[in-house]
Image 1: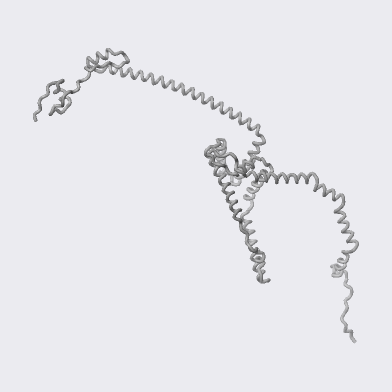
Image 2: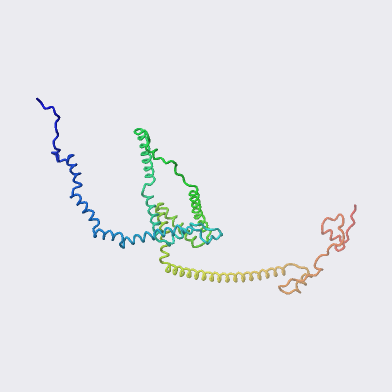
Length: 374
């Protein structure tokens, strides 16, 4: 007679023949977590973290000179950035035309004069890194890559959710109201952009119309150098040179201000002395040339008068004019009398007489006029 009862399972082995942990071994491990050995291990780890040596190391990193220096530098950097932001106020002085300047004049002066060195250094390094990133990193390509990946994941999640859950996943995260830019923020941004554009426009006109000749000369030199550099220097290299000069030029001047001012003063004195010497020399030569011209003009005038006098002496004259010319002295005009000139007619012109000579001959001074027949 056979046994029809179901078979009974024996004890589960701790490991299989292939040394693979079984379900019973996992249960035994879970039960071992509450064992004194595991608790001792946990206590040892906890006690190790609270050990005095460990606490000393933590205190050294958290309260030591390195941590204090980092906190102090962070506080100073934050304070300088606040000062730089607060400097955006319109300056008290105005342009030569009387127009008020923009608040960006104060901002860029504060930035480039290194009054807040940490903020200026960070902005300089950020600008340099931006130039190198624009040169060597395909930022535009990465932008499109992030865009298509984001849109692809959104579309896949929405379509997959509708197919599986009958509800789109992307649409479930849709906000109740889309974000919009407040009007006040937009107007403030537009006003700030307007001030920035006017800053560049005003400064260009101040340089163009030589409000400060030194700035105009510096702009001329920079433009001339840029004209020659652009032939073999790329745009990013020229931008890097320009940014370096804008930031490092004022720093070098402020660091060596006394030495540079003394050299500039000496150069100005030398230039003024040379200009005065050239001016005096030019005035001396001008006076000599003026005197020589006056002397030549006097000589030529006297010679011309002598030539005119000799020509008059050689010209045939009437005895009366000769006598009157003989009585006058040299260099003086001859005296003339009324007898030296012809008589003016004192009667009406005779009819039938056409020329002046006939009129004179027929007058009472030249002869008896014949009666004209009508």
